[in-house]
Length: 236
Image 1 (cartoon, rainbow, N blue to C red):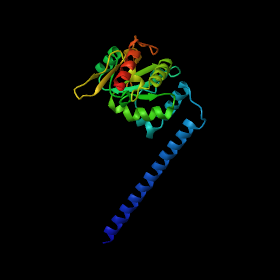
Image 2: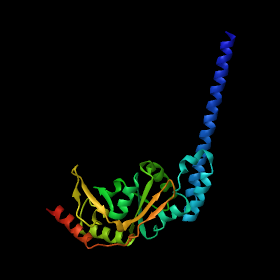
Image 3: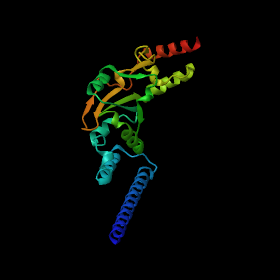
Image 4: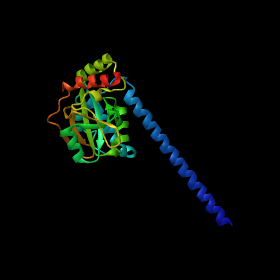
């Protein structure tokens, strides 16, 4: 009887010790998150690419959080490639599993169904936003496509969309070379020109593939024709 009582006392002590350990680890994580957010937003000023890379390199040294930074996207060259056009372009990222698909997007443009924003995420110098988006989507594939649309092009055609009073049409629906087509499911598919595809990054290895045809300020006469077609359809 005494041996059973001793066993239960030891078991309770072990469980109590484990619970205390879990609370300590949770407190450490909460403190880490709190201090991280303070560092990210405490100054209220945007960090430079160099400051961002220095911060991520520092965080990656922390053993408990290495799983959040176990790829190479935040190394100097990949990060600089991703954010290099941030001052004069709208930047978006898209993930794919196959290199052949990534190469096709570079060569032929980015195909999307109905809405560009279903699979393309906007990114900028917001450090926490970039980290959260990357960790939430990187399981979709090792190949991160970098899409850049020049700010002047975006502003011009957003103004044209407003002026024409076309509804339920986004900028990216207008910036296509060919008219949209319906797929087998009856959904409209669009192709953003490959000129807006800067290239792709293998975020596991850090490999960068650039698109030699990249031109974020590219403009086609078809853009205005697309807008006119959308307006004619809505007026009928």
